[in-house]
Length: 465
View (cartoon, one colour):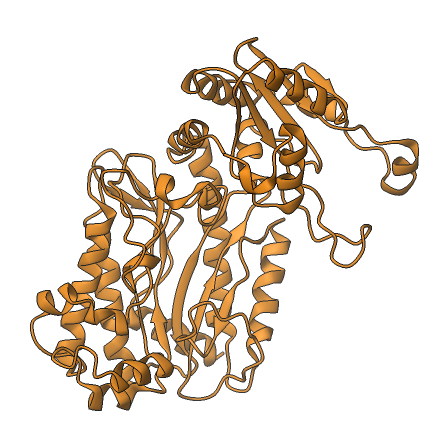
């Protein structure tokens, strides 16, 4: 946990930014895998961590704005539970570390909320994503689940705080980035012809565990880089393949990292691989150079699209003018994803609160319909202390190529004969985590090799050992 003052200050700011009523923040439970006593690894709700720092299951908290009172609701361990779990630090002790002096049994939450509700006071809550919390809110508010109305006022207040990272948060994120840097170098150093993908996953998972960390999301470690979220690890690494490794960790304080590197299974990229890789790397570097407060991330994404289109035009896979090709979204045959997203306590920070509040503004709403653009999670102007990812990529998806070609879609911009020569190419993605500074940006962590030459030299050095 951070200091008690940290959590007190965060709650005080939140309280000032919500007009009146009662703020109800729900923690998560241990979700069973197949029976109650065999749960998935517990992960506390990120907003609950942000305002209270307590990582125990089945907690709730009330910030009573009208009465200037904060209470943590939860049940201390029974004797039966102590028999199985041993003596644990009490909820009361943890609450005190968070600067909260009042704790009550979980069963008293119902009467507290009901009383406030009967008094006509506003009950502010965030969008629930766990089924148990949807049911709990339905019971607390005597409202059908489908009629629950999360507080937009509270959502905006939480986003305005959590998206601007404190210095101590940046330290934690940077710690997670440096662990991920080591994971990526470990994979690059050890990948060999004949290995299975799951062997690389096992290596990097052990490194994370040795640092008291765990994956911040299910990693993508694959020779099929064209499958954007590929979680299958059974393929064998063969000469001529590339490995796309998209993996990051969540450190003990629950701050995340999210990095991607693509490298050859052989010592060097093929000429064809290096040509595509160089386009992605150019987009990777040139879009970073645009980053500073006030710049709309939507325009940074557009720059990546232009670089991608021009590079593919130069290779003969696309044709015409890059500006016109991007205007007609022809680049999305190859670049279907968004360029990046916010990151912090969640690898896709605050995504549970709604992209319309986290990634966009009412003045600059998200395009939810256009292929490619609808996958862009962040489009609004950047601000100092944002932490974001930048992750351009080029992907050759045979099924998508077949569909577009059958429809003769955008034939003035796409050379389908040439594109079909790349059907078996796979995909390339490069990704870093970045802090927006006073007038520029800083790549977080100690640095991770990214150029084709750096990767080839690293691979050659380790494969020769």
